[in-house]
Image 1 (tube, rainbow, N blue to C red):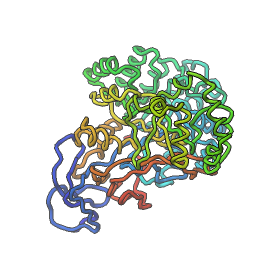
Image 2: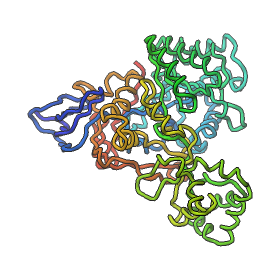
Image 3: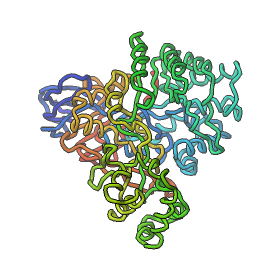
Image 4: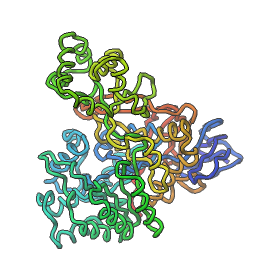
Length: 550
């Protein structure tokens, strides 16, 4: 019997958490048709001796809603084994949308997620009003990987309430309309509904985005309607009122297919574990995700993430090559140093969570606090700004610094991501594009938390980035390697797998900058039976589909 693709002799890590086993895998069309030893050749044979074969990875937290309009390959996640991505997180989406609301939604996405408004307005077709129409538009774009979407609180609330949605409570009738619109969006294909309760996520005029201060009864009404059509609820909360917010998440889970929320160690691992485990013991489907390393910005001369004084602000006006020349100009460099030194002890506090990412091909995300920028400076007899400039100068402007903002304590992070309910994720792909890059989190899980530290076994690492997120989304035909399931797979070399140093490119519409991050160690990525990546390079084929709610 002939097969479309045969993967030969791989170490199969099937996503269930079971021990890996040696087997061949046959693919016909978009399905896995045989696993084991069988007769017949493949039109394409992939030799996987000494390599691992896993399900495609699933990214539960992206903001690729805009980027997919001009980059159907949705880099950087497609370089890191991701075959399914969830859009529409944090309550910010482009549908439902009246024609008159486009400017508002684009401006909101720019200030909340650092995606240029001009690129959004010109890079998307904007030929929809309903959420189902938005998914239809994405389908026409033909992405390289599978795309699922959440409908956002901001757009839904603004669609019903207009300008009042920003700061005013909804009336009983408006709550009913918002909830019905959310339910209708799930009926049209949204996987669920997302809401954002972080006051620091703001509109261009400085006000918090719509839905931030919505009464919890509004969210419970939404959950009830979303649940009617089998959707999930995704919540981003500040947890300033911890017990009340956890009660809300529990109620959302009771009324829907499941509750998904974002978390960080700073909220408190033990108190979260107590509350979430009580929910799960009740039988509720409650899952959290967190970035599996310290989350935060990336700063360097190629970015605008660095010191903030008049001369440093002046430096931002120049292209990288000219910035390098300026920091090598003795007079200008001294101005840069003197202005930062004039800030006194505050500089040491501001830079205590800045960590040099190294000069190897692989970036370092795991330095101890004894290796932060002030400590490096002290060891060298320098001020932190002098060390920053020296490392930048020595690297011809390429040096980068990881600016940790949350999950700062890596020991506490290990405690968090080894609970039963906290899964790695929260890479924010497509957002904060010129400030941070965590799209390679799947590769980091396999290289750091499995290979380098042994915190996860290989089968547990794969389970947490394939099968578990598939279950969260209700994708019963993906997430594990089984006969009859969709052919989303990765073939990778665990010994060489790692991320590459982030870099700034200018490939967004109108030349806007963004970070990208490549990977090495991926021999093949297959999406719905099509090879979309071979030997770490995208093939140009687009096998993705729009995955709509059942």
